[in-house]
Length: 162
Image (tube, rainbow, N blue to C red; front, side, top):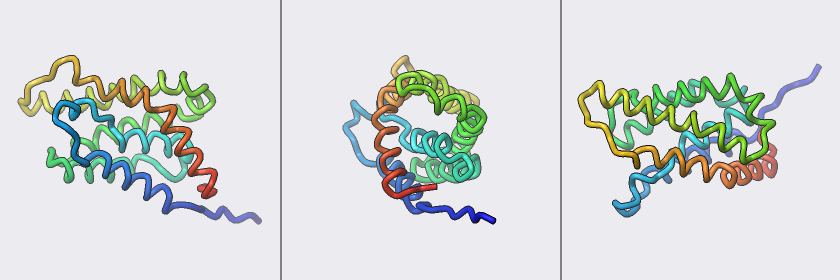
């Protein structure tokens, strides 16, 4: 009989808290529109690497936390993150075997879908749409993915997160 011990849950928590800090840390107003969705990127990594540990429930909770931190409609980010992580859980076996550049390209539609959900809900609420640079965080998230993946994989291997 084997026991499935889970190690390194505190590393997952620490990376998610770091993503929240990166989301609310002040940056110049001209760069605010290009801030990547750090929480979503970290959630995508952990749901791809450890799908049995990070799932839709954690994504929903992190989204609600983002809503509180950003002062947005409660459930706005939770809904978007839950949808994206659900899709990632369905696709993780395919995406994880891709080289990093293909992973980044395959994440671009997921990152854009998250922003599309936010744009749709804000449109239903009567908030005006945005210009083309609204989509810039998705592109920047795609470009940051290889660096983020290598860093998080190094953490996961060093601390033997399983």
